[in-house]
Image (cartoon, rainbow, N blue to C red; front, top):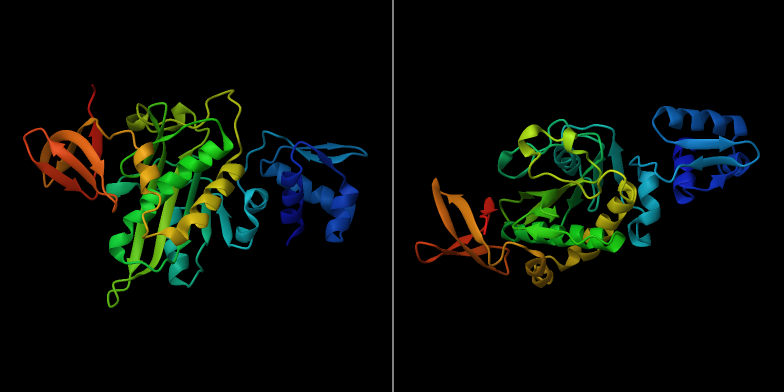
Length: 325
Protein backbone atom coordinates (compact mmCIF):
# COMPACT_ATOMS: atom_id res chain seq x y z
CA UNK A 1 0.00 0.00 0.00
CA UNK A 2 1.32 3.44 -0.90
CA UNK A 3 1.39 6.38 1.50
CA UNK A 4 -1.40 8.02 -0.48
CA UNK A 5 -3.60 4.92 -0.31
CA UNK A 6 -2.98 4.58 3.43
CA UNK A 7 -3.88 8.21 4.16
CA UNK A 8 -7.09 8.02 2.10
CA UNK A 9 -8.08 4.76 3.82
CA UNK A 10 -7.50 6.20 7.29
CA UNK A 11 -9.24 9.51 6.59
CA UNK A 12 -12.21 7.79 4.93
CA UNK A 13 -12.52 5.42 7.90
CA UNK A 14 -12.56 8.43 10.27
CA UNK A 15 -14.39 10.90 8.04
CA UNK A 16 -15.30 14.06 9.95
CA UNK A 17 -12.69 13.32 12.64
CA UNK A 18 -9.10 14.47 12.98
CA UNK A 19 -6.30 11.95 12.61
CA UNK A 20 -2.90 13.10 13.83
CA UNK A 21 -0.02 13.36 11.40
CA UNK A 22 2.10 11.49 13.93
CA UNK A 23 -0.26 8.50 13.84
CA UNK A 24 -0.33 8.50 10.05
CA UNK A 25 3.46 8.72 9.87
CA UNK A 26 3.90 5.87 12.37
CA UNK A 27 1.38 3.73 10.50
CA UNK A 28 3.46 3.85 7.32
CA UNK A 29 6.91 4.30 8.83
CA UNK A 30 7.51 7.62 7.07
CA UNK A 31 8.18 11.18 8.21
CA UNK A 32 5.45 13.66 9.08
CA UNK A 33 6.79 15.80 6.24
CA UNK A 34 6.01 12.97 3.83
CA UNK A 35 2.47 12.84 5.22
CA UNK A 36 2.08 16.60 4.78
CA UNK A 37 3.28 16.47 1.16
CA UNK A 38 0.93 13.60 0.36
CA UNK A 39 -2.03 15.41 1.93
CA UNK A 40 -1.23 18.43 -0.23
CA UNK A 41 -1.26 16.19 -3.30
CA UNK A 42 -4.67 14.79 -2.30
CA UNK A 43 -6.04 18.29 -1.80
CA UNK A 44 -4.91 19.17 -5.33
CA UNK A 45 -6.84 16.12 -6.58
CA UNK A 46 -10.03 17.48 -5.03
CA UNK A 47 -10.11 15.88 -1.59
CA UNK A 48 -11.48 18.32 0.98
CA UNK A 49 -8.97 17.73 3.78
CA UNK A 50 -8.70 20.18 6.66
CA UNK A 51 -5.56 20.48 8.74
CA UNK A 52 -5.12 21.86 12.23
CA UNK A 53 -1.94 22.17 14.33
CA UNK A 54 -1.68 19.51 17.07
CA UNK A 55 -4.86 17.80 15.80
CA UNK A 56 -3.86 16.56 12.38
CA UNK A 57 -5.97 16.04 9.27
CA UNK A 58 -9.71 15.66 8.75
CA UNK A 59 -11.60 14.58 5.63
CA UNK A 60 -14.77 16.66 5.30
CA UNK A 61 -17.98 14.71 5.84
CA UNK A 62 -19.36 15.83 2.47
CA UNK A 63 -16.20 14.90 0.56
CA UNK A 64 -17.31 12.43 -2.10
CA UNK A 65 -14.50 11.17 -4.30
CA UNK A 66 -14.67 7.57 -5.41
CA UNK A 67 -11.66 5.47 -4.42
CA UNK A 68 -10.85 1.89 -3.51
CA UNK A 69 -9.80 3.04 -0.05
CA UNK A 70 -13.09 4.88 0.38
CA UNK A 71 -15.12 1.82 -0.63
CA UNK A 72 -13.34 -0.74 1.60
CA UNK A 73 -14.89 0.39 4.93
CA UNK A 74 -18.35 -0.38 3.50
CA UNK A 75 -17.53 -3.83 2.10
CA UNK A 76 -18.33 -7.03 3.96
CA UNK A 77 -15.12 -8.71 5.13
CA UNK A 78 -15.42 -11.52 2.58
CA UNK A 79 -15.13 -9.03 -0.33
CA UNK A 80 -12.30 -6.82 0.93
CA UNK A 81 -9.69 -8.63 -1.17
CA UNK A 82 -11.47 -8.34 -4.54
CA UNK A 83 -9.61 -6.29 -7.17
CA UNK A 84 -11.13 -2.79 -7.40
CA UNK A 85 -9.83 -0.44 -10.09
CA UNK A 86 -10.91 3.22 -9.93
CA UNK A 87 -10.24 5.48 -12.92
CA UNK A 88 -10.83 9.18 -13.29
CA UNK A 89 -12.13 8.61 -16.84
CA UNK A 90 -12.70 5.65 -19.14
CA UNK A 91 -14.38 5.11 -22.47
CA UNK A 92 -16.64 2.51 -20.81
CA UNK A 93 -16.29 0.44 -17.64
CA UNK A 94 -17.88 -2.50 -19.46
CA UNK A 95 -15.29 -2.27 -22.22
CA UNK A 96 -12.48 -2.14 -19.67
CA UNK A 97 -13.98 -5.11 -17.81
CA UNK A 98 -14.06 -7.12 -21.03
CA UNK A 99 -10.44 -6.22 -21.70
CA UNK A 100 -9.46 -7.42 -18.22
CA UNK A 101 -11.59 -10.57 -18.60
CA UNK A 102 -9.62 -11.47 -21.74
CA UNK A 103 -6.44 -11.15 -19.67
CA UNK A 104 -7.78 -13.57 -17.05
CA UNK A 105 -9.04 -11.18 -14.38
CA UNK A 106 -10.79 -13.10 -11.57
CA UNK A 107 -14.44 -13.32 -10.58
CA UNK A 108 -15.52 -10.24 -8.64
CA UNK A 109 -13.14 -7.77 -10.29
CA UNK A 110 -14.64 -4.27 -10.14
CA UNK A 111 -13.94 -1.40 -12.54
CA UNK A 112 -15.13 2.10 -11.63
CA UNK A 113 -14.92 5.38 -13.54
CA UNK A 114 -15.70 8.84 -12.24
CA UNK A 115 -16.83 9.63 -15.79
CA UNK A 116 -17.18 7.82 -19.13
CA UNK A 117 -16.65 9.13 -22.63
CA UNK A 118 -18.49 6.28 -24.38
CA UNK A 119 -20.87 4.82 -21.82
CA UNK A 120 -23.47 2.52 -23.39
CA UNK A 121 -26.97 1.51 -22.45
CA UNK A 122 -29.20 -1.20 -23.84
CA UNK A 123 -29.94 -1.45 -27.58
CA UNK A 124 -26.65 0.31 -28.34
CA UNK A 125 -27.79 3.62 -26.92
CA UNK A 126 -25.45 6.11 -25.30
CA UNK A 127 -25.57 6.23 -21.50
CA UNK A 128 -24.98 9.76 -20.22
CA UNK A 129 -22.00 9.63 -17.84
CA UNK A 130 -21.17 13.16 -16.64
CA UNK A 131 -18.44 13.67 -14.04
CA UNK A 132 -20.77 15.50 -11.69
CA UNK A 133 -22.37 13.12 -9.22
CA UNK A 134 -22.41 9.80 -11.09
CA UNK A 135 -21.31 6.28 -10.17
CA UNK A 136 -20.30 4.12 -13.12
CA UNK A 137 -19.03 0.62 -12.46
CA UNK A 138 -18.77 -2.85 -13.94
CA UNK A 139 -18.44 -6.14 -12.10
CA UNK A 140 -16.74 -9.08 -13.79
CA UNK A 141 -18.51 -12.34 -12.96
CA UNK A 142 -17.57 -15.88 -13.90
CA UNK A 143 -20.70 -17.89 -13.03
CA UNK A 144 -21.36 -21.47 -14.08
CA UNK A 145 -24.47 -20.88 -16.16
CA UNK A 146 -25.71 -21.08 -19.74
CA UNK A 147 -26.01 -18.04 -21.98
CA UNK A 148 -29.81 -18.31 -21.88
CA UNK A 149 -29.69 -17.70 -18.13
CA UNK A 150 -27.82 -14.39 -18.44
CA UNK A 151 -31.00 -12.33 -18.02
CA UNK A 152 -31.05 -13.64 -14.44
CA UNK A 153 -28.02 -11.44 -13.77
CA UNK A 154 -29.84 -8.32 -14.96
CA UNK A 155 -32.89 -8.95 -12.80
CA UNK A 156 -30.72 -9.83 -9.79
CA UNK A 157 -28.72 -6.63 -10.28
CA UNK A 158 -31.91 -4.55 -10.38
CA UNK A 159 -33.07 -6.07 -7.09
CA UNK A 160 -29.59 -5.64 -5.59
CA UNK A 161 -29.42 -1.93 -6.46
CA UNK A 162 -32.87 -1.36 -4.96
CA UNK A 163 -31.88 -3.19 -1.79
CA UNK A 164 -28.63 -1.24 -1.52
CA UNK A 165 -30.43 2.10 -1.81
CA UNK A 166 -33.04 1.07 0.76
CA UNK A 167 -30.39 -0.33 3.12
CA UNK A 168 -28.58 3.00 3.23
CA UNK A 169 -31.41 5.52 2.78
CA UNK A 170 -35.12 5.85 3.42
CA UNK A 171 -35.86 5.91 -0.29
CA UNK A 172 -37.96 3.28 -2.07
CA UNK A 173 -36.81 2.84 -5.68
CA UNK A 174 -38.85 0.87 -8.22
CA UNK A 175 -37.91 -1.27 -11.23
CA UNK A 176 -39.00 -0.58 -14.79
CA UNK A 177 -38.74 -3.85 -16.73
CA UNK A 178 -36.21 -4.95 -17.51
CA UNK A 179 -33.19 -3.05 -16.27
CA UNK A 180 -33.98 0.51 -15.16
CA UNK A 181 -34.32 1.81 -11.60
CA UNK A 182 -36.75 4.69 -11.03
CA UNK A 183 -37.28 7.01 -8.09
CA UNK A 184 -40.12 9.54 -7.93
CA UNK A 185 -40.90 8.96 -11.59
CA UNK A 186 -37.32 9.54 -12.80
CA UNK A 187 -34.72 7.07 -14.01
CA UNK A 188 -31.78 7.06 -11.58
CA UNK A 189 -29.98 3.88 -12.63
CA UNK A 190 -29.39 1.81 -15.76
CA UNK A 191 -28.02 -1.73 -15.95
CA UNK A 192 -26.29 -3.39 -18.91
CA UNK A 193 -25.27 -7.05 -18.86
CA UNK A 194 -22.91 -8.43 -21.49
CA UNK A 195 -21.94 -12.10 -21.67
CA UNK A 196 -19.07 -13.90 -23.37
CA UNK A 197 -19.96 -17.56 -23.90
CA UNK A 198 -18.02 -20.64 -24.91
CA UNK A 199 -19.44 -21.76 -28.26
CA UNK A 200 -18.53 -25.42 -27.70
CA UNK A 201 -20.07 -25.84 -24.24
CA UNK A 202 -22.80 -23.20 -24.41
CA UNK A 203 -21.67 -22.03 -20.96
CA UNK A 204 -20.81 -18.47 -20.05
CA UNK A 205 -17.06 -17.84 -19.85
CA UNK A 206 -17.42 -14.39 -18.33
CA UNK A 207 -20.16 -11.90 -17.72
CA UNK A 208 -19.85 -8.14 -17.33
CA UNK A 209 -22.46 -6.40 -15.23
CA UNK A 210 -22.53 -2.65 -15.83
CA UNK A 211 -24.32 -0.39 -13.36
CA UNK A 212 -24.67 3.38 -13.76
CA UNK A 213 -26.25 5.40 -10.95
CA UNK A 214 -27.02 9.11 -10.91
CA UNK A 215 -26.23 9.84 -7.27
CA UNK A 216 -26.16 13.63 -7.13
CA UNK A 217 -26.05 14.50 -10.84
CA UNK A 218 -27.66 17.93 -11.36
CA UNK A 219 -30.34 18.21 -14.11
CA UNK A 220 -28.20 20.51 -16.24
CA UNK A 221 -25.47 17.85 -16.47
CA UNK A 222 -27.75 15.51 -18.45
CA UNK A 223 -28.04 15.80 -22.24
CA UNK A 224 -31.14 17.81 -23.11
CA UNK A 225 -32.85 14.85 -24.77
CA UNK A 226 -32.95 12.83 -21.50
CA UNK A 227 -33.64 15.56 -18.94
CA UNK A 228 -37.37 14.80 -18.83
CA UNK A 229 -36.81 11.22 -17.69
CA UNK A 230 -33.41 11.31 -15.94
CA UNK A 231 -33.11 12.04 -12.24
CA UNK A 232 -30.79 11.50 -9.29
CA UNK A 233 -30.97 9.77 -5.93
CA UNK A 234 -30.36 13.01 -4.08
CA UNK A 235 -31.36 16.56 -4.92
CA UNK A 236 -29.51 19.78 -4.02
CA UNK A 237 -29.23 20.31 -0.27
CA UNK A 238 -30.62 16.86 0.50
CA UNK A 239 -28.87 14.71 3.09
CA UNK A 240 -27.02 12.03 1.16
CA UNK A 241 -24.71 9.08 1.44
CA UNK A 242 -21.37 9.01 -0.35
CA UNK A 243 -20.78 7.26 -3.65
CA UNK A 244 -18.21 5.09 -1.85
CA UNK A 245 -20.84 3.92 0.64
CA UNK A 246 -23.38 3.19 -2.09
CA UNK A 247 -20.79 1.33 -4.16
CA UNK A 248 -19.83 -0.86 -1.22
CA UNK A 249 -23.44 -1.73 -0.48
CA UNK A 250 -24.24 -2.56 -4.12
CA UNK A 251 -21.21 -4.86 -4.24
CA UNK A 252 -22.28 -6.55 -1.00
CA UNK A 253 -25.72 -7.24 -2.45
CA UNK A 254 -24.59 -8.42 -5.90
CA UNK A 255 -21.66 -10.56 -4.79
CA UNK A 256 -23.56 -11.87 -1.79
CA UNK A 257 -26.31 -13.32 -3.98
CA UNK A 258 -24.54 -14.19 -7.23
CA UNK A 259 -24.31 -17.85 -6.22
CA UNK A 260 -28.12 -18.06 -6.39
CA UNK A 261 -28.16 -17.30 -10.13
CA UNK A 262 -30.32 -19.74 -12.04
CA UNK A 263 -32.54 -20.49 -9.07
CA UNK A 264 -34.75 -17.41 -9.67
CA UNK A 265 -34.91 -16.83 -5.89
CA UNK A 266 -35.06 -13.07 -6.37
CA UNK A 267 -37.88 -13.03 -8.94
CA UNK A 268 -40.72 -12.66 -6.44
CA UNK A 269 -39.06 -9.53 -5.08
CA UNK A 270 -38.34 -8.33 -8.62
CA UNK A 271 -42.05 -8.57 -9.48
CA UNK A 272 -43.03 -6.76 -6.29
CA UNK A 273 -40.69 -3.90 -7.09
CA UNK A 274 -41.64 -3.65 -10.80
CA UNK A 275 -44.07 -0.76 -11.32
CA UNK A 276 -45.29 -1.60 -14.84
CA UNK A 277 -47.30 -4.72 -13.99
CA UNK A 278 -51.00 -4.09 -14.60
CA UNK A 279 -50.15 -0.93 -16.56
CA UNK A 280 -50.97 -0.11 -20.16
CA UNK A 281 -47.73 -0.34 -22.16
CA UNK A 282 -46.42 0.29 -25.65
CA UNK A 283 -43.48 -1.39 -27.38
CA UNK A 284 -41.89 -2.16 -30.74
CA UNK A 285 -41.27 -5.69 -31.98
CA UNK A 286 -40.16 -6.66 -35.47
CA UNK A 287 -40.80 -3.12 -36.75
CA UNK A 288 -44.38 -3.11 -35.47
CA UNK A 289 -45.90 -1.11 -32.63
CA UNK A 290 -47.95 -2.99 -30.05
CA UNK A 291 -50.03 -1.87 -27.08
CA UNK A 292 -51.42 -3.91 -24.23
CA UNK A 293 -51.38 -4.61 -20.51
CA UNK A 294 -48.21 -5.80 -18.76
CA UNK A 295 -49.64 -8.98 -17.26
CA UNK A 296 -46.84 -11.02 -15.72
CA UNK A 297 -43.09 -11.42 -15.35
CA UNK A 298 -42.09 -15.03 -15.86
CA UNK A 299 -39.40 -16.94 -13.96
CA UNK A 300 -36.84 -16.34 -16.71
CA UNK A 301 -37.46 -12.58 -16.59
CA UNK A 302 -39.62 -12.42 -19.72
CA UNK A 303 -42.56 -10.01 -19.73
CA UNK A 304 -45.96 -11.36 -20.72
CA UNK A 305 -48.21 -8.72 -22.32
CA UNK A 306 -51.92 -9.10 -23.05
CA UNK A 307 -52.36 -7.29 -26.37
CA UNK A 308 -55.17 -4.79 -26.94
CA UNK A 309 -55.93 -6.45 -30.27
CA UNK A 310 -56.18 -9.87 -28.64
CA UNK A 311 -53.76 -12.61 -27.66
CA UNK A 312 -50.56 -12.47 -25.65
CA UNK A 313 -46.92 -11.84 -26.48
CA UNK A 314 -43.79 -12.79 -24.58
CA UNK A 315 -40.97 -10.23 -24.47
CA UNK A 316 -37.51 -11.43 -23.51
CA UNK A 317 -35.90 -8.06 -24.15
CA UNK A 318 -36.68 -4.67 -25.60
CA UNK A 319 -37.92 -1.25 -24.54
CA UNK A 320 -41.36 -0.86 -23.00
CA UNK A 321 -42.97 2.50 -22.27
CA UNK A 322 -45.82 2.98 -19.83
CA UNK A 323 -48.79 4.82 -21.34
CA UNK A 324 -50.52 7.55 -19.32
CA UNK A 325 -53.61 6.40 -17.43
